[in-house]
Length: 572
Image 1 (cartoon, rainbow, N blue to C red):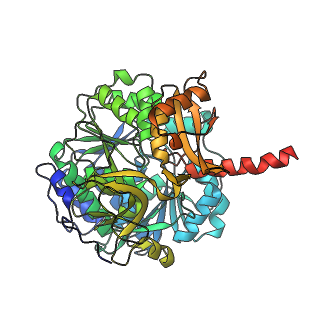
Image 2: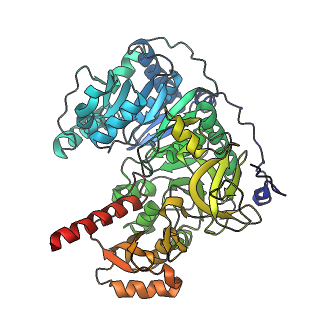
Image 3: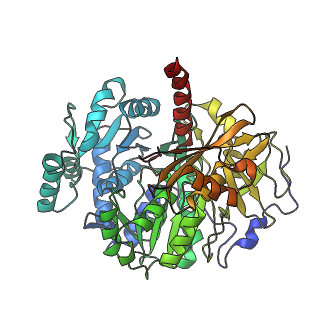
C-alpha cells in the first residue's frame, strides 16, 4: 500500500527553533555507552537521590560496575540472559539497572505489586534466570520460583543504600514496626549489599554491545490481553533517549537540572525520561511511594527541582494535596504528562497554580515509549498529544490500512528508530501490529490536522457505539471530571436493547452530596445527546488502575458484566 502524502511531514512547521528534524541516533551504540559518557563527564555531580541520600555519577559507575562483575563472575550469567528487577524507586534500582546492562544482560522490569499469577507468567515467559527483589515482595516470588528458570535471587531492603545508622533504623522500622515484610523463604538468596561488596573485588571484562542487542523485555500493561514482552534493543532505547533529550534541550542545561520521578522506573515512560536526564548529567530524585501525598509534597518542598514527570491522576491528586500551596515552583522548567490523556480541568489548574503548562506526550511500551509530544514552548494545554518527535513518522490509517482524509478519525500508526523489534517469542502477535510497510499500529484512534498535530480520541477497543454513532470515553470522562464534585470517573459502554450500547459512568465523588441527576444535567450542558451517560454508578473506593494510575476500563467492563450475570440469578 502507499501512504505517500503531498507533505509527508507537515509537523516540522510546529518544531520550535533549534529542534532538528533528524538527529544522529547512533551517537551512542548502547545504553552502556550512554552511562559511561555521563559518569565520566559528570563524575562529581549528584546522579540519584532517594530518602535524603544521594549518590554521585562516580559512585553510580563504581557500584554498577561491581554489580555487573558479580553477575558475570559469581552468578555465572552469560550475555543475553534475562534479569528481572522487582522493586520500587530506590537507589538500588539504578545501580542494578546499569549493572545488568553493563554485563550484557537483558532487563525484565517487573511490577513489585504483581500477584503470584502475574509474576509467574512474566518470569516464565521471559525465561529470566536471575531476579533482584525488594524483601517486601519476596513472599510472592517464593510462591512461584519453583516453576520458573530463576536460579539467582538477590534480595534488598528499603534502606540498603542509606548511611549505616539510617539504613539499620529504616530497615528495622519497615520490618518490625510497620510490618511491611511478610514472612518469606528463598534458599540461597543473597543480599544486595553483599553482592556489591563481593563485586568490588572482581574484574569485569568489557562486553561489546551494539544497537541490535536486546536491552529490555518490557511487558505491556496487560490491558489488551495476556501481557507480552516488547523487545526493546539498545538501539531503540538510545534513539528514544536522544530524541527526548533533543526535544527538551532548549529548556535544559547539562549538569544543572533536577528531575523528580514519582512514577515507577519499571514503567517505560519513567525509565526513558530518567535515562534522558542521565544523558544530560541531571540529578534524578526518586519517589518510592507517591501515594503518600504528605511525604511526596514534603520532597517537593525541600527540593529545588527543574523538571517533573507524572500522569493525569497523579497531577490531580497533587493539586488537591494538603501543602501543595507551600511548594516553590520558581525553578520549574518542564512538567511532562504521559501514560494517559490529560483532562482539561487538571491542565488548567496546573498552569494556574504553577505557571508552567503541562507538556503532554504520547507513546507506547512498543515505542520505547515516546513518539509524539507537544512542543516545549507551548504556553497552554491544547488537548492535543502533539507532533512526531525527530526521526519519527506518524500517519492515520483506516481498518484497511489506507490513509484517511485529513481531519478524519483513524488509527494512529508510527515508524521510527525507537519502535520495538517485536514481541518476545510471539511472531504471530508481532505480525498483527505491523503493516506490510512497517507502520506500527498503536490501537489508538486520533486525527491529524493540516500542521501535523495529532489529537487522540480513544483506544480503538474502548470505543462505544450508540445507535451507530461513535462515543469516545475520554471525551465523556473529561466533561464529567470538570464537575467540582467528582474525584474519579471511568466511562464504559453497556448493552442497550434500543441503541445497541449506552454510556455508563462509574464515579468516585469528592462531594458526598453529589447526585446522579446533577451529574447528568452537567453532562447535558457539554455533550450532544447520544454522548450523555444513561447510567451513573457511585463508588466509595478508588477505581481500578494500572500501576501508573491509568483507570482500567476493561476492569470496569468486567465488573459490569459480572454484576449483570449475578442479577438474574439473585432474582430467581
